[in-house]
Image (spheres, rainbow, N blue to C red):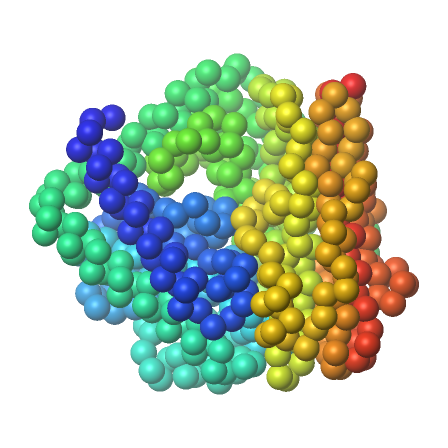
Length: 489
């Protein structure tokens, strides 16, 4: 890779990183400014991702479909479009995507808004059955004062919503300026050529990584913990030369609840695993995914059709997809034991406030090292909400926040430990919990022991993995997150 391409590639990635920094620093909600539940990327004129910041895996793998949905409307220079519809490029409704034109393509941000309407504060109901129950559905729409006002009118905490949308807009205006400055400094044709080469360079490196794996076919399966019983996910991995295919035939039909994934989320999970196991240091662009084919039968859990609910699919099913695909790859290469396999989604709110957080847990051990403790695993790459910020912003008090010692699975290398998080609510509110690995433990690998299962409690009483209920002032929520599996005997 020549020096000029390295310089231009770093400049483009720097624009994406700066977009993310502007969004985080300008945001109003703790979910974005503290947890950094947002992502940013640059695309070329053909709608191909050429540079992305290292943000949220489940956001970034799904962004190309959002850009394709907006490009179909032929957006003009200076226009910004927004969407959150999972069936036209979104993931789940709280993740709102903005797309704008730059001098050489498109700038994209995606941020998890603390509320987008729906029947539960925080827009993450545990028991939704149709998409419209989860919030405002925004198809690709040109963003102006009228369209933004219409969308925000049906959301809670309107001023906070406006503040977060303005933060996203600020990131886009910065991207437009930075790309224009880069073209002026280096030449438009040269920057466009660098975009093309970055895309192809990533593709070549991932193809080389795949070619180093043995040809063959391997299968794996796992389950999701739906309230009415387990839902099975099956995947078959086929490696042939420098290409691979992941086929989810045999996976359960789409769920009557909200554990469904749009195809964009399923692809994100697959791309994440491929990048981890082939060339984790490859420049982050869409070219890395060219050698990967994902097949998912329509109408299944991993390629749902509208109006199926998807709130838990984006956060929980995506984690199980990663677990399942890693397990399939274990037949072809060294793969880690399973991590906690859940984001432990906690949503608390009423008409006055909405608080959303995903909780860290244990990562699975790998063939040469213990798994890290108290980290976000697989498809989430967010931070926690600091205790000081949480207590300042919400009527909540953190009673305990600690490692869950001994929750990692044993083995030659030990899985990481989960955490214990206790929150006392100081005023009446609604609680929604969406979690996994409460009845099935994260698996070990190569003879390693499984990690400990997670547990949810309110005032000392067990609460199911998926639950929505009322809390009164003084009630205490305790979440014990799963540990990671161990590796080796």
